[in-house]
Image (cartoon, rainbow over all chains, first blue to last red; front, side, top):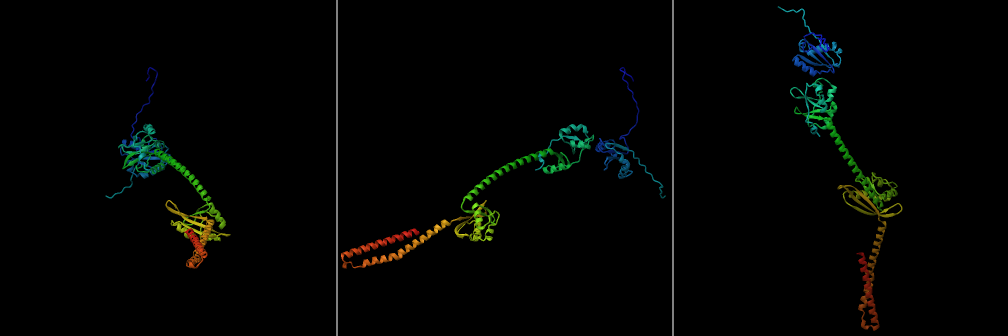
Length: 115
Length: 339
């Protein structure tokens, strides 16, 4: 669109559906992040009441971990933290917020039952 | 002293989920803000130090967990807690409710003022003590001068026989008699036990007994003829209790040379004895013959005598009576001297 004074607008426009909060399974809060764990926890409670559990870890780079309670119903949080400690925490930088896709699939094999 | 009087009951409150940026100006002005949760219950105290150390966008994330104090907490204890937690301000809670805030600066100011006050008081007392000490030194010097000017030896001895004080005369006498100087703190009995001089033995043989009597509050005076190395002299020893704040702290031994006076007195006593003897002789030996003469003249038959002999006998009788009167007067005079 061109107006009389010669000023132009050029717009790239697209749409995408998002969900709040912008992650579904796990959020890792790095040390010295601009957002504190209490503030984030409060905002989660407002967005998804009783949806996430705050887990504090004694890692030098990690302030806290928010875990979707749906995951906690499938595996213990200690196990989850162990996995994160091994696979994710080494990559967390100071002040960083990191979302982690943590999809849990549970399967059984060779289920045998008596008639 | 407790922190009660230093509690700041006026304080500013901020919600826990306030933005840090929004409250930073208040925080700088107030130095501390009480943070309340959604139920308006205090959950902590926010300080500039918290924001610097744990900067987050929300106040609640900046909070540091700290202990609280009670109003009856002592100042020293409060300062210790502040020192340990590296904080400038703490909440004061009473029965679960926030009473107010206590600031480290207020406590330190008070303690500093107290120290200055104490320092001033100590300085004043030291000055007074120095003046008293100066006065005491002067008094002691004067007393020493007075005692040194006397012709008597003066020694102050403690109940345990240690020497507390002695004058110059005592020091000189000790050196001359025992060949060793008196020293304060020394046991005076050592001067009697270890010396070989007669004078010391003679004088101090009775020392312990007389000194112990003085310690009971009695004043004891003795006069003895003391055999010195080359001569003998009369000495007068006075033991007097010394009181300090109604308590006997020792006794003084004052030894005075009374030899000249004593010898003079003895001479007078001897002269008196001689006079008494003369008086006795006069009254017993001289008056008897006179009395005999008077008796004989009274029984002479004067009618058989010539006038000349009668006159002679009368003169003899008058002369004998005069002699008797002279003797009587001499005896009376001697008796009056004796009295």
